[in-house]
Image (tube, rainbow, N blue to C red; front, top):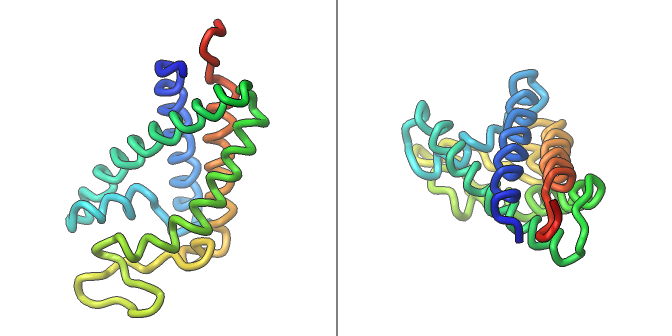
Length: 161
């Protein structure tokens, strides 16, 4: 694996994905802020949560970039379309599996079955994260597709220039 390439382009891909999703939130297309949701897992301070969450999201982006790089090396090809396919699969996993499981892990998030109490103030994402807005699944797909396309386009396979 080309670690330097994976880390460099994983950083660029994560920042791009985060900007797409933050833009969608800013334009009212989605209420979901992954940095905020992740940050509130680690701090009850809502003002610091986005900063902490961005750091956690960046580390997660690097981890996923390493997984993508391992997949590219095993195929062995790295291209925009291979990255796009991985990004689509990644988004579907996040929407269908990871986000619905989040209330069981997140100390400040209500669940679909129990609802909020004074210590659990965040709304659960629900199926396809639809509780955060009708366009949330689409903005999540677009962000993850961009992540995959950036990695697939710019990641250099081991042994290539």
